[in-house]
Image (cartoon, rainbow, N blue to C red; front, side, top):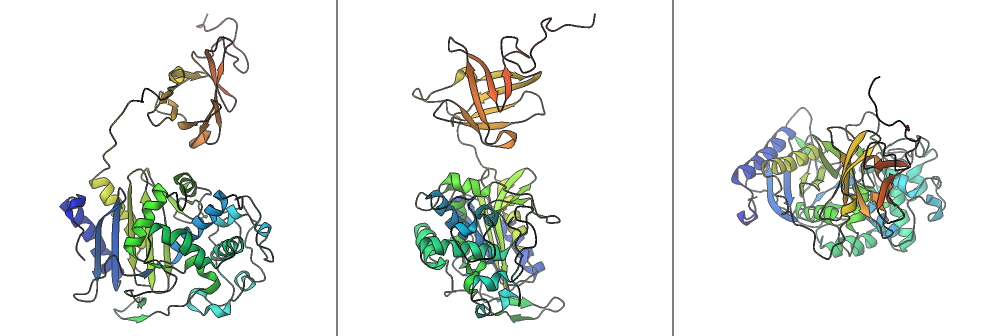
Length: 461
């Protein structure tokens, strides 16, 4: 498959590096085929493929099974229910879906895989056996659904996302597939993302681990487990979905809710290589680059979709082999190639408009005790609080209508910053979660906890 038009301005050296990476992946991973795409600034800037069939390479319109990337779609449906006020993430499952053995688990715990549920279903390997063996949730959960106390730790659970799919059906009164199509696929134009395969699509293969031979894998319908891993999709569709996961779409889900999904909700499972999990999205910190996405696999297929909001780059990798090709690792490499070879050009600096309210009185140096801090106001209307020196806490704050500010990240996330004023209206000090920031170290004119020694600052006598 040829690269897309040079109008998208990826350098020839970058395109060659991308081609080389998937060529190595297909060769070393012994995959019958692999197709990949890179999205930058909302546009597909590169597509590529490698195949073992001479003269027959897949393109961005060929369907592959995407496995657990399906979970991100299901999570978006749940977040829509939350944003519509039909549920709260802290709700117990049995508030909306009764009759299961997991009623005490919260919606948030299911989204973040902290419900303590088993990783897999009882009985036969569900991905490679008929769905008729598991016709109801009781068959998915079994007699002993829990492995840990809910909320205790991260433990990835396919049954947990099956419950979320059933929750969507209960609150919408329609099958998960219909809700998915109406609320995500159609609005975003993902016409080649489907529950059942539609031509052209790749066949799934098992490659022998010790010989260069292969055999076809069965393509089972997952039935009630569909919300955990059923979907088929293409590199082009997943590229559009990745753009949505960063920017949002008013017809589907807001950028703020998607940012919530990309925020780590839990530490990684002990022994796992991932950095953590958000709400339906895996999250990584790779060399200081914050990444979000999801991997997927089903017999015959592996998939990876990863994005960097800061770089405005996403990468998709799809292959039709049961194992061997590390789709997530390859997607991360493709993303890194573009982000590092052609770093994002920042938006031009612009001053505030004359009509913008500018809180200049909050800007400049402040002191928390003896620690020197500085407050800056950026043109996007956010306050930045950080140390003057090389170490210390840094945070950004969003303005509220009542004149306070809410922390967005780090130690002060969710905390309230308030400017405390004197009788004449001037700012005396800043109060941040009981911390007092003053214009001078331990300013005697401000209510410093513990007070200020009347003798003031002095040397050794």
